[in-house]
Length: 538
Image (tube, rainbow, N blue to C red):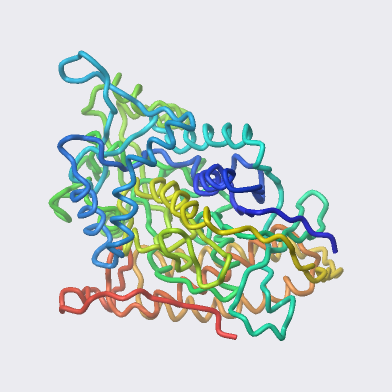
């Protein structure tokens, strides 16, 4: 079996992967693998912006404190300090790569300054943005720079399957686990290829598609998390799936995000009768942290039996709204909703995973030469609940930290030939429909039993049903011809099981995780919260 070698192998083409590739290209050859087109990533769907201290009224201490408060006592304070304090420098990196952020005239009107907006949980305006499509703009500019960089090559339609470890090549190797490369499916040819590298970086994003309703793109199936888990890396805090409070509720739209920035500019959550309700749940009202807003909306919907609540912007200047939120304005118009005159129907949806593969701030994992960055990683920055707009910041900060760690490491000059891939030849006419049924069953289980509000009984039911599904998934994966859909099903089943296992370990309610049987936080009893860690048991 032939293999492809490079110095740095980056899996994933979101902001974390592109930023890492640009940094590492100064050290050697970089190969980016992406399972679909390179433009497809959660990063392009990020509307709000990037949090960074730029205002003279603001401070690192304030940004750090807001992050810790949102994280509900579970943040790693060293990780928070590392990432928050380098934010202005990382913004400068983005600007150097061609990113443009919106500016506005100063109060005196004599020059322009960064147009900073405010989002839930932030004490000051510190969100830099490009209209209401920051992620798309940033991703586009970095992709342009990547394509202009000779040392970087992109392979699209190449789906990572599993890592290649030293122990798989030589079972008698008594050295600690070390990643040598990975196997990946070429979606175009249907053949599996092997890739080897000095350093392997997983930047595959989140796993929102594990849930029935999500703001994520269709490929957010937790691939890197599942791959690292199967190789023996620890996972932590997967129970903290952040549900974005405001996803557009419409029969023809299932995953369009209504940015938190609308509430930052004065948007108000109301019920069907037009009554604002958030103040009775939290002093910050509609700008409360996301976990509180999502649970409050869930409670209002259950209390009234309504299928959704509404976000109203009608009391704000219409021209300002059209200029500040052009993409959201146009998208709503497609569904006959003029947000300047009509409240937007919204519901919560799975949005961002605060847990992931256990790493330090540079992405270092339990396995030598394997790094995980971005949403797939659990650095401790987000704790039990992510502060809005800290996610894109984490991507570029981890890319920088990774670069610093690797710039003095020498690349390997020789590589070991990986073992050939075994190809099951069995096919079945109803194979794909069964796979899709299992996919939908997993997502229904997770939404109904491991959603915004949980209970011990619901978690037990989820655990039991997922165990049976996982057995079927293993049979399909082992016996049927390899296919992209089978790989994704295997990954979401793996991540779903790990989420339930993490949630079952948590004996209190904290941050995003709310259990009806354990509604209080152990912090209130003077007990410091701990990470819920799971790993593959051989």
